[in-house]
Length: 250
Image (tube, rainbow, N blue to C red):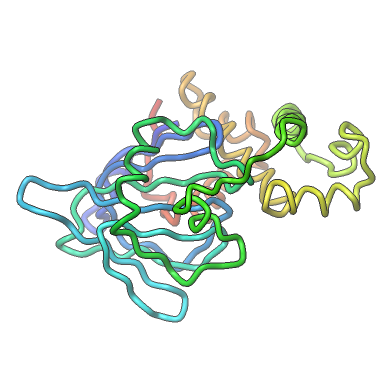
């Protein structure tokens, strides 16, 4: 799925948003966002303009502002991106914070993340330690059976999401666990709340609908959102973008 902000004198967001299977990428200029948090880990990488390096700015919930050519935000960490004249174009990478991060992340983006780590600054980390593990190249060596378990859960959610509500009990039945046990195992293995993960998957499922030429409303219903407004609210809470200023394109 790609999204391009509609022309707006007060809007400094210009670029494209691409949704992958377990990641998302914004490429373009960055404007201010409201304070928000999302279930994806986030990296903001300055792209070097012809006239020299650019610096990005981000504010923590307590008002502390960091400046760097690369910024790292842990999952569910409140923050706000800030626009400045020196910002320039950037890549904003969102990664599903599983124990084994985004196997499908394009090699070019992986390389850009690796190259940026030396100059990256991180807001005070949360308990997830996603970026610390990434920097240490210590992505957990997850046993194959755990990978298969995650794939089964993801496939079940993706199957049920377009139909409407995704019941924890139904997913539990498919992986032979009680709902309460699944709730705990899910948080441990996937690294996020079940309900939040379902919303994240709905957002990614909407992408192919738009690529096939569906309207925003059709894509919202195709991914199981209640309506286009629900889709827009999720876009905003995930990416910090004002959906009323965005024009989704095919």
